[in-house]
Amino acid sequence: MSPRTMEAEGTSRASRRRIATRRGVVIVLLVVCVLLLTSFFRESDQGFLHSLKGTITDLANPIQGAASAAVKPVQNLAGWIKDSRSAANQRDRLQSEVEGLRTELARLQANKATSDEYVDQHAAQLQLSQKASIADQYSITTASVASRQLFETRQSARIDKGRGDGVTVNSLAFVPARTPDGKTVFGSLVGRVTHVDANSARVTFITDPSQRVAVSLLDGSDTVPLGLLQANGSGDLILSGVPSKVDIKLMTQVVTRGAGISTLQSPYPPGLLVGYVSSVGQAALNSTWTVQVDLFRDPQELGTLTILIPKSSEAKHRAGVG
Image 1 (cartoon, rainbow, N blue to C red):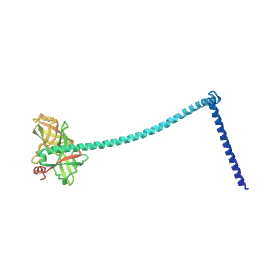
Image 2: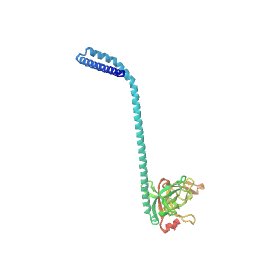
Image 3: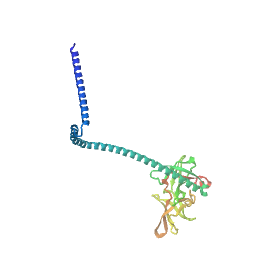
Image 4: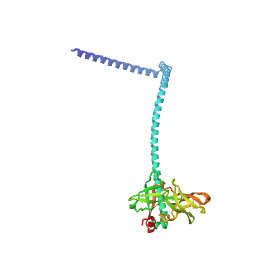
């Protein structure tokens, strides 16, 4: 028999002895445990094993308490970290929900504003079409504002309708406005078309200093001539040189007079609502009034305009296109 074989057999016998020893120890421990448990449950509460259990418990309690006290800060820290992460996740989720709700609210508000604008436009167009002087002379259409000049938003805008849609130079631009009680919607003049391309046109508002409009004061059923309404550099509409004998009251409506400058034909027919008197100042020597007129509606507020296109020979002649 070779030395290697002998060494393997020796190792195997040693392993078996260790296994047998371990088994023996386990069996002895099981027997002892069974005996102890049997004795524990058979003896009275004042027995040795019960006394030993109480002594061990008394010794273990301080150790257990110290261990719990030592572990508690660690548990508290772990709980705080967990709660912080949960709170952070909840915060992020709520912030995301809030942003989503804000976006949805903005969308709904924009849709409502657009809807309200179209409703007002339709009401204003209906009011304009019921006036014989408008219905017989002009075609009415709606145009969207395609763009505005960056530094001249109150002076002009480009609309998405042009020559191909029948729009001509001196077509009239209106916006919907409401009476002070908010119940009645009417069309308010804000400007005219000054340049036309194939598919677009430029509307110049009367708040542009280059525009001058002959206006009258609407006093009941009568109109009192005032003069030429023109914007200053700030875009405020001013009437200068109004005779002081004219009785002017605040909030009185101002309408187009339909007259031109010298021999020039006015592109605006008479009787179109423009604005109202917002302030009156007296010039030197009490000879004349300086009157400021505010529009019923600022044209830069809206994304659509009502356009009146001349269709009768009289309206085309007034516009200089026929």
